[in-house]
Image (cartoon, rainbow, N blue to C red; front, side, top):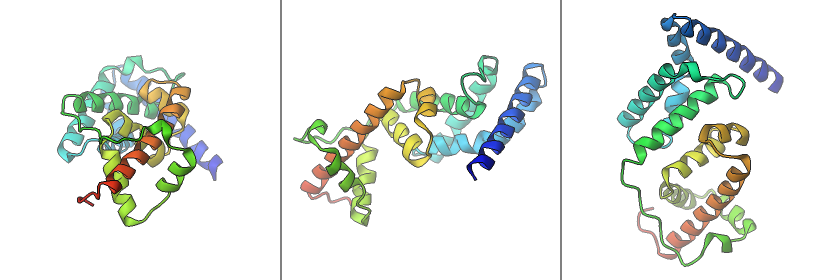
Length: 200
Protein backbone atom coordinates (compact mmCIF):
# COMPACT_ATOMS: atom_id res chain seq x y z
CA UNK A 1 0.00 0.00 0.00
CA UNK A 2 2.80 2.40 0.95
CA UNK A 3 4.64 1.59 -2.28
CA UNK A 4 1.54 2.46 -4.30
CA UNK A 5 1.22 5.78 -2.46
CA UNK A 6 4.91 6.47 -3.04
CA UNK A 7 4.50 5.72 -6.76
CA UNK A 8 1.56 8.12 -6.97
CA UNK A 9 3.60 10.79 -5.20
CA UNK A 10 6.52 10.27 -7.59
CA UNK A 11 4.20 10.64 -10.58
CA UNK A 12 2.70 13.81 -9.06
CA UNK A 13 6.19 15.22 -8.45
CA UNK A 14 7.21 14.49 -12.04
CA UNK A 15 4.04 16.12 -13.38
CA UNK A 16 4.66 19.13 -11.15
CA UNK A 17 8.20 19.53 -12.49
CA UNK A 18 6.93 19.42 -16.08
CA UNK A 19 4.34 22.11 -15.37
CA UNK A 20 6.89 24.24 -13.53
CA UNK A 21 9.31 24.06 -16.47
CA UNK A 22 6.49 25.10 -18.80
CA UNK A 23 5.60 28.08 -16.59
CA UNK A 24 9.23 29.18 -16.42
CA UNK A 25 9.41 28.87 -20.21
CA UNK A 26 6.63 31.44 -20.53
CA UNK A 27 3.51 29.25 -20.48
CA UNK A 28 2.11 31.00 -17.43
CA UNK A 29 -1.30 29.37 -17.87
CA UNK A 30 0.37 26.10 -16.82
CA UNK A 31 0.41 27.37 -13.24
CA UNK A 32 -3.35 26.82 -13.06
CA UNK A 33 -3.09 22.98 -13.00
CA UNK A 34 -0.61 23.32 -10.11
CA UNK A 35 -3.11 25.45 -8.22
CA UNK A 36 -5.89 22.97 -8.99
CA UNK A 37 -3.75 20.12 -7.69
CA UNK A 38 -2.39 21.72 -4.51
CA UNK A 39 -4.62 24.72 -3.75
CA UNK A 40 -7.05 22.82 -1.54
CA UNK A 41 -4.20 21.35 0.50
CA UNK A 42 -2.79 24.84 1.06
CA UNK A 43 -6.20 26.19 2.09
CA UNK A 44 -6.78 23.31 4.53
CA UNK A 45 -3.33 23.88 5.99
CA UNK A 46 -3.92 27.62 6.44
CA UNK A 47 -7.40 27.02 7.88
CA UNK A 48 -5.87 25.04 10.75
CA UNK A 49 -4.47 28.25 12.17
CA UNK A 50 -6.36 31.19 10.62
CA UNK A 51 -9.75 31.22 12.39
CA UNK A 52 -11.66 33.34 9.88
CA UNK A 53 -12.63 31.55 6.63
CA UNK A 54 -12.37 34.84 4.74
CA UNK A 55 -8.89 35.53 6.12
CA UNK A 56 -7.80 31.95 5.44
CA UNK A 57 -8.95 32.30 1.84
CA UNK A 58 -7.06 35.59 1.49
CA UNK A 59 -3.88 34.12 2.98
CA UNK A 60 -4.17 31.13 0.65
CA UNK A 61 -4.46 33.40 -2.37
CA UNK A 62 -1.51 35.50 -1.16
CA UNK A 63 0.59 32.35 -0.76
CA UNK A 64 -0.27 31.12 -4.26
CA UNK A 65 0.58 34.50 -5.77
CA UNK A 66 3.91 34.51 -3.92
CA UNK A 67 4.59 30.99 -5.18
CA UNK A 68 3.95 32.07 -8.77
CA UNK A 69 6.15 35.14 -8.41
CA UNK A 70 9.03 33.19 -6.87
CA UNK A 71 8.69 29.99 -8.90
CA UNK A 72 12.16 30.52 -10.37
CA UNK A 73 13.55 29.97 -6.86
CA UNK A 74 12.00 26.54 -6.46
CA UNK A 75 14.68 23.86 -5.99
CA UNK A 76 13.46 20.31 -6.58
CA UNK A 77 16.62 18.98 -4.94
CA UNK A 78 15.56 20.41 -1.58
CA UNK A 79 11.83 19.61 -1.50
CA UNK A 80 8.80 18.65 -3.54
CA UNK A 81 6.69 21.46 -4.98
CA UNK A 82 3.95 20.57 -2.50
CA UNK A 83 6.31 20.99 0.47
CA UNK A 84 7.76 24.19 -0.98
CA UNK A 85 4.23 25.56 -1.37
CA UNK A 86 3.40 24.74 2.25
CA UNK A 87 6.56 26.54 3.33
CA UNK A 88 5.35 29.70 1.58
CA UNK A 89 1.85 29.29 3.07
CA UNK A 90 3.34 28.82 6.54
CA UNK A 91 5.31 32.05 6.44
CA UNK A 92 2.43 33.95 4.81
CA UNK A 93 0.03 32.82 7.53
CA UNK A 94 2.49 33.69 10.29
CA UNK A 95 3.00 37.16 8.87
CA UNK A 96 -0.76 37.70 8.98
CA UNK A 97 -1.09 36.38 12.52
CA UNK A 98 1.78 38.43 13.86
CA UNK A 99 -0.10 41.56 12.87
CA UNK A 100 -2.96 40.47 15.11
CA UNK A 101 -2.93 40.58 18.89
CA UNK A 102 -1.67 37.35 20.39
CA UNK A 103 -3.68 35.64 23.05
CA UNK A 104 -2.20 35.65 26.51
CA UNK A 105 -0.60 32.57 27.91
CA UNK A 106 -2.38 30.99 30.86
CA UNK A 107 -0.36 31.59 34.01
CA UNK A 108 0.46 28.52 36.06
CA UNK A 109 2.63 27.79 39.05
CA UNK A 110 4.01 24.61 37.46
CA UNK A 111 6.77 24.92 34.90
CA UNK A 112 6.61 22.64 31.86
CA UNK A 113 10.01 21.16 32.69
CA UNK A 114 8.58 19.83 35.96
CA UNK A 115 6.01 17.59 34.26
CA UNK A 116 7.04 14.03 33.56
CA UNK A 117 6.50 12.63 30.06
CA UNK A 118 4.49 9.69 31.40
CA UNK A 119 2.07 12.09 33.11
CA UNK A 120 1.79 14.17 29.95
CA UNK A 121 1.05 11.14 27.76
CA UNK A 122 -1.59 9.89 30.18
CA UNK A 123 -3.37 13.24 30.28
CA UNK A 124 -3.22 13.91 26.53
CA UNK A 125 -4.48 10.42 25.72
CA UNK A 126 -7.64 11.08 27.76
CA UNK A 127 -10.30 11.59 25.07
CA UNK A 128 -13.33 12.35 27.24
CA UNK A 129 -15.40 15.28 25.98
CA UNK A 130 -14.30 17.51 28.86
CA UNK A 131 -10.61 16.80 28.30
CA UNK A 132 -10.91 17.29 24.55
CA UNK A 133 -12.53 20.69 25.12
CA UNK A 134 -9.73 21.63 27.52
CA UNK A 135 -7.15 20.39 25.03
CA UNK A 136 -8.58 22.58 22.27
CA UNK A 137 -8.62 25.57 24.61
CA UNK A 138 -5.02 24.94 25.69
CA UNK A 139 -3.83 24.70 22.09
CA UNK A 140 -5.67 27.91 21.17
CA UNK A 141 -3.56 29.76 23.73
CA UNK A 142 -0.27 28.79 22.10
CA UNK A 143 1.62 31.14 19.81
CA UNK A 144 0.50 30.88 16.14
CA UNK A 145 3.73 29.27 14.94
CA UNK A 146 3.47 26.63 17.68
CA UNK A 147 -0.14 25.91 16.73
CA UNK A 148 0.93 25.43 13.13
CA UNK A 149 3.75 23.13 14.19
CA UNK A 150 1.33 20.92 16.12
CA UNK A 151 -1.08 20.95 13.19
CA UNK A 152 1.61 19.90 10.72
CA UNK A 153 2.85 17.04 12.87
CA UNK A 154 -0.20 15.67 14.68
CA UNK A 155 -3.11 16.58 12.40
CA UNK A 156 -1.54 16.39 8.95
CA UNK A 157 1.06 13.74 9.75
CA UNK A 158 3.99 15.40 7.99
CA UNK A 159 7.37 13.82 8.84
CA UNK A 160 9.75 15.94 10.90
CA UNK A 161 12.21 16.28 8.02
CA UNK A 162 9.50 17.84 5.84
CA UNK A 163 8.26 20.09 8.64
CA UNK A 164 11.82 21.23 9.26
CA UNK A 165 11.97 22.50 5.69
CA UNK A 166 8.54 24.16 5.87
CA UNK A 167 9.26 26.07 9.10
CA UNK A 168 12.98 26.54 8.40
CA UNK A 169 14.21 24.73 11.53
CA UNK A 170 16.31 21.65 12.33
CA UNK A 171 14.92 18.20 13.13
CA UNK A 172 16.54 18.37 16.56
CA UNK A 173 14.88 21.69 17.35
CA UNK A 174 11.48 20.37 16.26
CA UNK A 175 11.71 17.24 18.43
CA UNK A 176 12.59 19.37 21.44
CA UNK A 177 9.90 21.95 20.66
CA UNK A 178 7.16 19.35 20.20
CA UNK A 179 8.08 17.73 23.51
CA UNK A 180 8.01 21.12 25.25
CA UNK A 181 4.66 21.99 23.66
CA UNK A 182 3.11 18.75 24.88
CA UNK A 183 4.21 19.64 28.40
CA UNK A 184 2.98 23.21 28.00
CA UNK A 185 -0.44 21.95 26.93
CA UNK A 186 -0.42 19.55 29.87
CA UNK A 187 0.29 22.32 32.36
CA UNK A 188 -2.40 24.55 30.83
CA UNK A 189 -5.02 21.79 31.08
CA UNK A 190 -4.08 21.19 34.71
CA UNK A 191 -4.41 24.91 35.38
CA UNK A 192 -7.81 25.10 33.68
CA UNK A 193 -9.08 22.11 35.66
CA UNK A 194 -7.71 23.51 38.90
CA UNK A 195 -9.45 26.83 38.33
CA UNK A 196 -12.74 25.14 37.47
CA UNK A 197 -12.82 26.54 33.94
CA UNK A 198 -16.37 27.76 33.17
CA UNK A 199 -16.08 27.85 29.39
CA UNK A 200 -16.02 24.13 28.65
